[in-house]
Length: 61
Image (cartoon, rainbow, N blue to C red; front, side):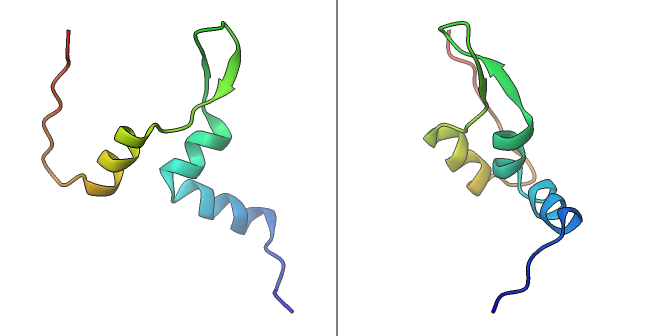
């Protein structure tokens, strides 16, 4: 039987993973003016997985 995690242990897991943190604690207003959880899109997730010490991000216009 698996040991049940405490609230503190669960919070520590979330705080160490930005993807989980953003989904649980960051809220944004979407295009429909609704408050929703911030979920990384595939490009953002790829960047988070592959980022290094120095990163250049160009802003398209």
